[in-house]
Structures are given as C-alpha cells and as structure tokens.
Image (cartoon, rainbow, N blue to C red; front, side):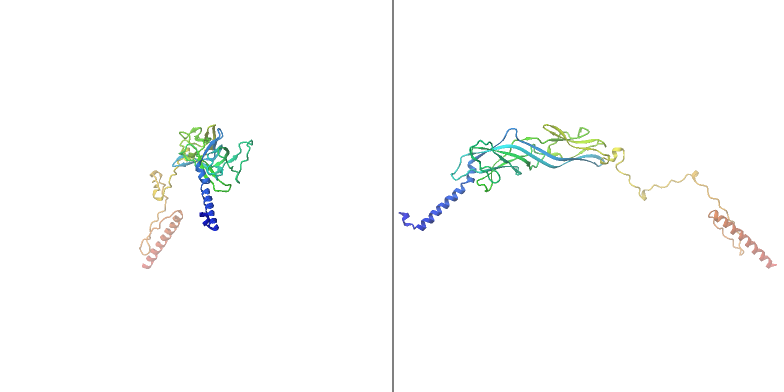
Length: 339
C-alpha cells in the first residue's frame, strides 16, 4: 500500500541507500572485528631455537698516573637468531563476509620469517600474497623458519638478549598489515660470558655478560712480554676472543726502574753557585816587572805603567830606560846653562 504511493525513482534511491549501508556495515565488521574474535597461538619447535653473537674485540694498554691499565673494546656487535615456529589462529569464523587473513611473522622488527609448507600431502593449495605469506585457515598450524640478524640493544641489566616475535595479518593480499599478537620465544642462548686474564691470571672477579665487555682494568703487575687475553666462555666451552702481548712502549717507564716524571731543568734562579776554590787550589800569581817612577824634567814624577803580561813587560822596561836617559840628559843640560 505504501509502496504503491512511492514513485519508482524514489524507490530506487531508497534501495541504493540500503545497499550502501549494508556494505559499510560489512566493512566495519570485517578483519578488524574478526581480529578481536579470533585467538592466536605461537610455539617454537623443540630444540630448534637459539641465539648467537659475533663481534670484534681489541685489547690495548696505557700508562695512567704512573700505573699500567688494560682496556678492552668491543665493536661491530651482531646477534643472530634461528628458530622454527608455528602459529595457529583459533576461534570462530565470524561474520559471513569475513575472509581468512594473510599472516606474517616478524622478529624484533628486523626481518620476516619464511613460511614453510608442512607437507605436500594436503589436498588443498595454500594461497600466498606477493611476499610469500600464506592465507591461513582457522584451526590449522602454519610453520615459519625464522633466521636472521636481529636488532638487539643488549644492556648489562638484562640476563637474556630480548627477542620478540610479532604476528601480523591483513585481509587482502595488498592491504594494510595489523598486529594480531606478540610473543617472546624461548630460545637457547649461545651468547658467551667474558673473562680477562694476564698470564692466565683473571683480572675480573667473575666473568661479565655480553653487554659489559667494554672496560678498563688496572694492571699494576703488568710487564713487557706478558700476554693479555679475553676469554669467551660459552655453554660448549671457552675460546680466546682476543689476545695482546704487552710491549714496553705500552707500559709505564717506572716498570724498568725509570722515573716516569722527568726532573725539571733548573732555571737561572735555581742554578747552584759555583764552589769557592780552596787556598791550596788557588793558582800562583803571574810575576810582573815593577817599574820605578823616575823624576821628569819638570820635576813631576812619571806614573808607573801597569803590567799586563809578558808582552807588556818588555815594552815597559824599554820605556823606563828611555825615561832614565831623557831625565839625566835634561838635568845635565840645565847644569850647563847655569855655568
């Protein structure tokens, strides 16, 4: 009755609005709603999971405040993980328009795990996206091989390097990935502890963890020719991670009886006075020829010339003789004038 009063054009618009509303509601109840309705299980296959570490360790020595020190430096630290895990989604299918999601596993936000088909005896073919991730069916387990270098910031306060597996899902092959669950797998740690030795004598009270390798240790007993080693102690035994043979140039000079602090050069004010020679050490005076002053013609006595050595002595004698002659001659001439 009411439909008869509605024109065909108006009826068409109403039907279009109803269809649009159903499509929007179905999209809202899609993968996002299904993710809340389903559960996720993750497990590591027994005996397959481990974590290992590689790095470069160097040793150096130096003299600080007159005491030898040993320094250990670690660089290019890398952690690698390897395990086989399986994930299974549980729960109900959800709304009719829900489709089973594509799933991928990512380790420490560093690398993706590779999906490995369980066996070829299955009667159905698993759909994969462009990245090779499988489109899963609820209730079935899917195996992944997780192997790669994990970005790990290993601190000294943590006993085990942290490894996190995050499960992502998306409803379409090119849709947006959403996090479904996060797990911390139980892995066997092959990361070693470290000890520093000097001629096989430990310099540490106990081995240190992987995050505490960078260190500086006092080594007052270090001598040239001795060996310093960094020992990596793992679950399967120990190995030499680094070794250094000490040289004298790397140690303090006092280790060979040389004062490490050089004596300062005395300044002018600090120069000690020269010692006064004893009377017995005084050299004898050089003999000189004494010159007796003779009276001049004018009656003024001539002054004595100083003797300055052997060369001056003969010259002084000549002058003295000349003065005598001139003096006598002058007196005689004066007498002749008086007579």
